[in-house]
Image (cartoon, rainbow, N blue to C red; front, top):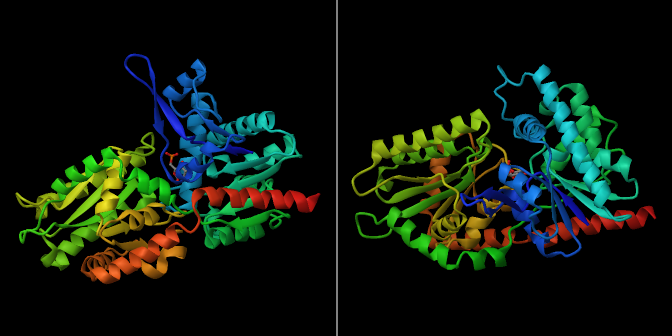
Length: 464
Ligand code: G6P
């Protein structure tokens, strides 16, 4: 069994003494796939993403069961930054500000050629590694052309593809040049089976195929709503480094004038345009405006970790998040109360500490394939947290009933939802959090992955 994804389970940095240090990969894809780490028969093919990764490949350093491809840095940059993250991610999350963007010019065409080369490098590596009849599961929008290319090289393989993002509806997908849209769909349809996180994204893909290709051409579609790994998270959240962070964070949150601990509205995200962090801050400011009774009694704990910093628009967004947080602190803060505690340096242990202390979780993306944070916080919160959840997150399909739903663009309504969460009786919050945690763990990563493999193998049996 083989897995292919752009980001692998670890990345490397070269220390000052020349030694290589490993770091866990971030984001929903790596969290989901971490379950296969222990499978001795699996090979995970991924790309070198940094100079440290390339150095690791050169030195032959690596994890068991992982093959990192050293794709030329300029080809990778075009494919990853240029096409995957600036075009396909934008299309599926509907992020373009269309009066000025997108512009599909000669530069785009040049980058597209790199995207093709990068997909071909994956297809060739997979073709080389796969045993006869093996199952190959290709991940995400970085690798949409791989199923078609691999099918040509190795017709004996069973090929699956899984999308961790939303899929754009046809009226948005058609922003892409016709030939490129066709190539993406035909590339994906080279798979025997395609997986999506929710029915909504699967339906959007099917609608695109009906409009811009000859339908699904015999490709099977499945929906697999990735859940969280409760055992791993609960264990990890009680290790010593998390306990240390809890002490520090309690200090930062502080106590209200009446001596009770302040309430915490917690969010943890990559600093990602689609996560809607700025509107989240504006909603919190609105809450402090509309409901002065919360002043000095609540803190917004916002962790916004660096992501895709090669892209100027992400750097600008990071600066805007910091600016708005500072503005709120200047406007409302007192010598004893910092209304927003913003951290921008990645720290998984501190995230888990914040989860444990959350009274309200704020998950308000513009659009999101699933959003695992929405599942992780109710599972780990020790205060029975309320979940304010965007109806545009994939997780909404599973968690909507016990969450407080918001339209992510409506900051006044999001402020109201924050108030509702903060004011909810402890009994109701605990009841809801229990049901949310149940839904969040319904399909743990191991099972999520096995279901896809079994479905692929069943197809093989049928065709035999
Ligand atoms: C999303 C994508 C993943 C990606 C992750 C982190 O979850 O679906 O494919 O790995 O974001 O983004 P990055 O660009 O850092 O890999």
